[in-house]
Image 1 (cartoon, rainbow, N blue to C red):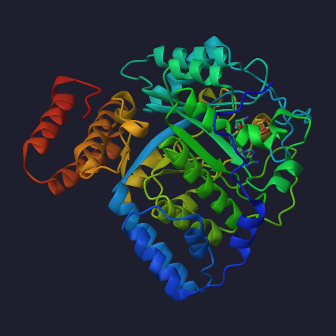
Image 2 (cartoon, protein in one colour):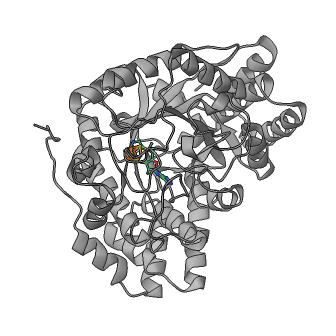
Image 3 (cartoon, rainbow, N blue to C red):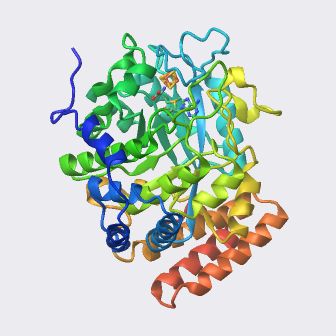
Length: 468
Ligand code: SAM
Ligand code: SF4
């Protein structure tokens, strides 16, 4: 028997969300009223989010874009946190129609990293300067909670030169309470589960009933069990392109409210992957999301859940990422390879070994330079999670002065480490200029003095891993 969470309830009402997604008429005054509310950093109700989704006039949509840009600046500043995904194994018992790892696809090359391969991948990621990873697993009896926990511990223990992985997140199938406890004990950061589609009918269509993933409620309830088992850092997401994008936005906001209301803590992050071409996958394109609507959904999510981190992955092209970033993204992956053991391989993507095709294949350093050229500060900060500032104890960003006190200094300290240990001469020059310019914006006082001291200790005394 499956043990669901204590407060398990199916909180997604298809008829209600469908009617909010399609039945709300654009009312300019009301849209502007809600934009104004969101600018006060107040989370929006599902019905209010539906009003923003109803905006169809280009000028009104432009106002939503501008508000999202402003809110991102106010809440997150110009930092972008950098991570990389690491696929551990692509065996899978499920049969999701959109995924190249689905079990019925015999032509996919299957693999689980062995110990030596894991070490090789981590060393390569550390050599690129990475500090934060998300481990990705198919769903398979081999990938037990113990296996995942052991993998997490192994990742933390692998060190090459000045390299170390300081935060390991997981994206995998939902588990039971006991499983979550095991991975939590191994020191994971975020546990991420995407509902894929919140629409029941579509969910059933793309996840065959006799598979594990075919159980909608087990998945919807997955992060509630995670919370009850002690993981207070959760990531939600929807795979855009399976059903009406407006419905999925409302589903994400409903899920966020449910976690907040039930457990006092909303999701730490929201992901909004768009379906990509994949080996052996042919999908009806009816619900595919255009670039313009993608921008709308990111901007509206930003306004609806002002304090939730938003993740934009390398599924998107460099051009799309550059543009969408300004609407409220707080984390991106860089130097991404999703082929199993791909971080030690040269050459282009081989689709029969990968879950889907990625859109941004640039190396890490190129992405970082691009970010800095556009005024962003790449950050490798892992401080909150390591200082116990997670969940209810410490709602990130909700505290006045949070960015000035923690985020900006930690971004600059970790960027300095990167520049010294991993960057080429050109990147280092760009980065040092950026750090100096960011320092000049910080007002004089004990906090700045401490930061300058720590930057000097990194530069001149070889110290590492200094954080606030
Ligand atoms: N097997 C676990 C699961 O399904 O929860 C791990 C997740 S999977 C390896 C990571 C995510 O990739 C999925 O949750 C899904 O949203 C996304 N994904 C699958 N196929 C995709 C495709 N063709 N294009 C873009 N994203 C895809
Ligand atoms: Fe398996 Fe996840 Fe792919 Fe579904 S999305 S087939 S569960 S790896």
